[in-house]
Length: 469
Image 1: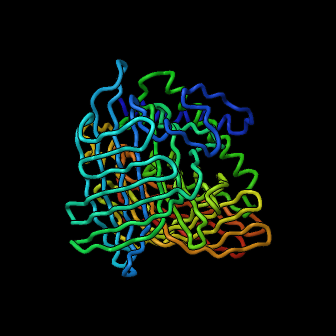
Image 2: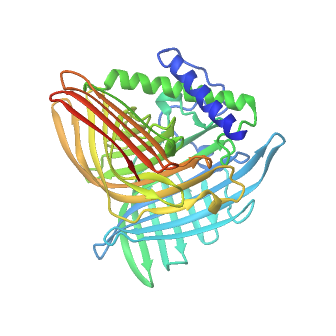
Image 3: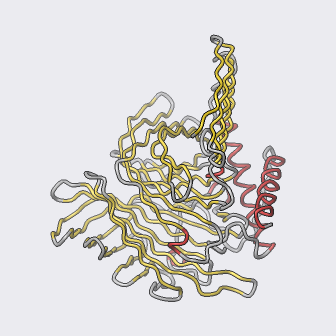
């Protein structure tokens, strides 16, 4: 019965968005967290917001050691609690310390979990988050970071100074209101360019480091573990309003900026019913991109409902919603029963600005699952991390700038337990480019792949097969 309710809610929401996608009016969001604009943060933004349902502080640093080696160091400090009609109950707090060696591709992971309230400690009006020996401390623009991976004998000490302004996620599209399924809303800001100095000790050997880092703080007035569950009707309405407003803004961006390519495509997979792709990209010329792709309605490639935040200098940001994603390599995660991209292309358009990027993985992909965080998760889900290289170019008017850089990507999926992987692709090519129709269906439940191609122009071509997978 609960699965039928979930399917009904998704269908109803999809129909609602389809009906109003052409509306240009604005929805007034009466959430208590609305009202912040631009790239400002205050001490009360940086400190903890308890009581709330979920809060996260994270750092990801791209480091160069004094021996020439390239490493990444990252940590997430998080707590989330159960939400009921009577209020919040005890939940979970955790710290995840991660390192990557970009030469070997090896990944080092140290995950510590406890109940909340518990080991994790936070403070109002400044960043002061600790978990055992690990901490992030400071107030914009200065922060210090200390994390110890006792499992792999790696200790990292960093001093960071923000060389940028903060930016609120969905600032332009929803006024900064971030929906979480149908459960409620939240907000998040990021600082994508922090200059870094410090040291890293690996198996007893200390190295001085320099580099650049990313810092993010997320606050959620919802139940993080149950994005599909409606606890309060008013919060569900706030979430739906934010989704609608985001959808209207996104559709407008696509309509205004999409180059005409004479194709019509639909790409759906139930691996993408709910979750997100979140990435940080830093280029050698200090151009910077933060990518947030909420995965919903199953859209997994083509004109995805994603957003990127592009800045040349860390001061002025461009929020871009017209994106085309081309997946060039996937991996099947057997435990989760899903496919996630390993490598892909991203093409972004807004006005005279264009970004054309190719992402190639250079490290191991890592897995962490809902039940690893908390046993009471109502949906099965997984988080998959990778790091790699990105190349491409930026175009503005007649000016082209080549881009080379690095990225890290977090791909998280909330998965219905009652379905195995299914995928549906439809590509219709129209004149003058040609005239053809391609349809592919993949169903793991029956272990079948079906394909049909009918091409009339530029030459006749008909293909059809059904095969076991």
